[in-house]
Image 1 (spheres, rainbow, N blue to C red):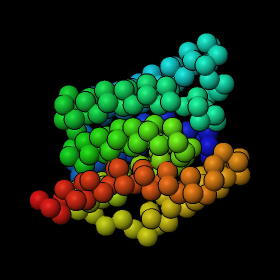
Image 2 (cartoon, rainbow, N blue to C red):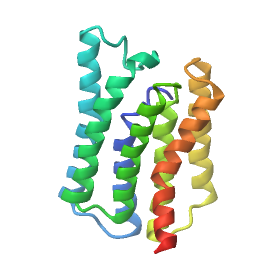
Image 3 (tube, helix red, strand yellow):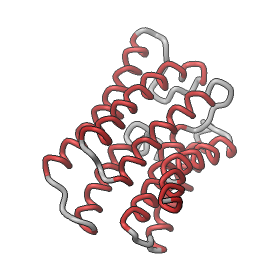
Length: 201
């Protein structure tokens, strides 16, 4: 679970899922647009941040990709936040993504910024922040298209969230408070802003 849902993989999963769902339930997306959205997401939120971590590993500045030592997380998170900012710009200003997707991208960028700041004092779970952001993004998508998620959908994603929490706890990577806070941070950043925007409009 910790490998499959590594934080820097999750945005690509999410964009691929939203492109598929939008095509199935709203309207077909242009194939080139979807390819650029998924490819750009993979490059900016996965390849570039992992490359920066790998370079730091070669220099002896960090030990591994898991970044288990909180002191080693600051710079990788900083570089990741910059990459996420470029990703948000790609989605919002260049691809003119659907409104709900723009909110998700900006929210995910805000989430990694929050994690980077909090990590200086407390080792919040980046895994659960990323996955919580994906769950929040799914509810954001449902709100954006005016759909009500089925109980099966809710059970699936909450069940996966619990399994990931268990994984991080079983590995002694975090405390229960750290995984729960991370998950709630992800949901709050990707879902609540769009929810407030929709109901305030």
